[in-house]
Image (tube, rainbow, N blue to C red; front, side, top):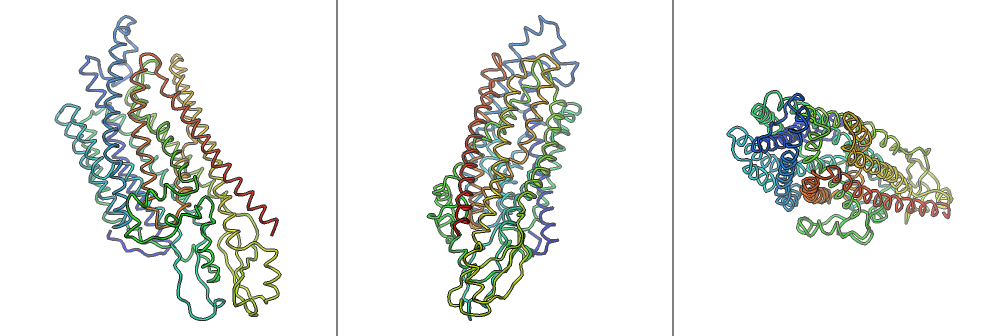
Amino acid sequence: MFLSIDHTPHTKVGHVCLIVFFVFLANLTVTGFNFVTNQYVLYRYSEDAGLPYVTSASQNYKNLSLSVRTYNDDIHDRVQAKTANFLGLLDLLSLGCSIVVVLYVGYLSDRYGRLLAIGVVLLGQGLSHAVTACVVLLHLPVLVLIVASLSRGVIGGGLIALITQVGVCFADMTQLPAIVADNMDGPCDNQVKVQPDRSKMERNRLILFGVFDAAIMFSNALSYSLMGPIVERLGFIASVLGLLSLYCIPVILIWFMPETRHLSLSASDSVPVNTYSSMQARADSSLDLLNSPDCPAVMQPTSRSTSYGLVATWAIVKSQHPATLLIMIIVFLYCIFVLSDTQFTFLYLMSSPFCWTPEGVGLYNGLCHFILAIVSVTLTLITAWSMRAKSTPTELTASIPGSRSASGSRLALLDAEDVVAEIVVSSASVSAADSRNIPLRQQTHLHVIRSRLRMLIYLSCGLFMITMSKIIMGFAFKLSNPLCNAAVFVALIFNFVRAAVVPTLKSFLSSLHSVNNQGRLFSLFGIAEYFGFMVGTPGLAAIYAATVGLFPGAVYLLSAGLGAITVALALLLLHSAIRELSVLHAKDRIE
């Protein structure tokens, strides 16, 4: 709020670093409180059932005699089922209340700025943390945690809303500005307009979302690695007091964060082209891949009096091309079968035959997210590097009405990146070039398709590998110790590819829509995540609770089935992109 906005590269880097540091600390505290809440509920229910809460390997009931262990099995299964059901209920209440709140947060973001929306989310999270701390410090009934869930759901929408709004900030920094027709004096061929290099924006957006996702994973890794040992060695009181103190830092940082809603593209990311070509590109912008040519309410700038709220958000969903809807379905299913297992995976690993302690669970989750963060950065950079065009500089021509007879028509020489040089050609060379060269708009369109094609290939492969990891986890409990633990780490290796799935989805989706729709678009993305979590978190937890005594890995096999559906949808998008690319190549050969 206190920072001024300019467009120098150093200032932009500073803004990105500040936002990343903010979301790192905010996510660290939220993840820490979630870990403490899960362990505390298990601790209280175990205490009520007369079972010891596992704080070290020597206290684990795997070391008890066979008769005692058999007697405790039924009680242990009931405690696990009760814990899973209650944690699922907490998430259901939180997500159910916030499903509409996230739309209002998106409205606040587009209307009044990103920082106000983020501030509202922080307020709700702060109230939730305060209630959780009171339950732990005062030994209140665990049912009071329902108040904590409702507070973060009703006020702000919770962690997903926070991540969504920070994602909007990054989209603002790498979004094409709305092209507005200018009143120009003089001949068209003497006018030069600055137009953004879209291919560079695609790469920058993917890199930023990759860094953003990696920061969240690093934050999760640090949070789990710290909270597991702290809970086991120092107890719950020290845990919540430390987290409350840490939460004050992002509350202070928000006052120094920049408002990105009005950020425009810097000159270094733009290329000068003929004014007529810019206006023509604006008129033909509906030809972009996977955009709807007959849905101007979605793709074109709209008045602020009619573009906010449910109507505008529903207009994005009704876009005639199915890509937006398919991406939302993939996000919905992805949140169910990949991200909704936190409420029962720790129970699965703390039961027989794994018999892990809270410290072991925390260190395992920390290692998992740390490696995911490293892989996320690596894969994102590799993908962004592969999106660089490899063609040589090509002369791009445009038919300019009223200026074909002029001997000094100004054209642009555009290479694969954003290097532009203006040249002067005669009218004869213009006529000759029109028949053999690719127009600027068509070449840019072709490069964007190829970039998105690479993203869809990775998405399909990543979802397939994640599905395989779920299958391995589903059968791991059938193995004896230590083979079962080895299977868990094998599944972890298969799961590494998920690191860049979310930033790829966000980057792909953001590139399909104009700058005016980014706030509502990411709110729509958040809604898909909310529905996924709202269905997956309590649903999978209930399935685990129902099957823990019969086949504990059944919930993972169900998740693998949902993963197979997402792979099929990703392949459908990939087929659509390949077909679009084939059509463009056919047009090039005809021309």
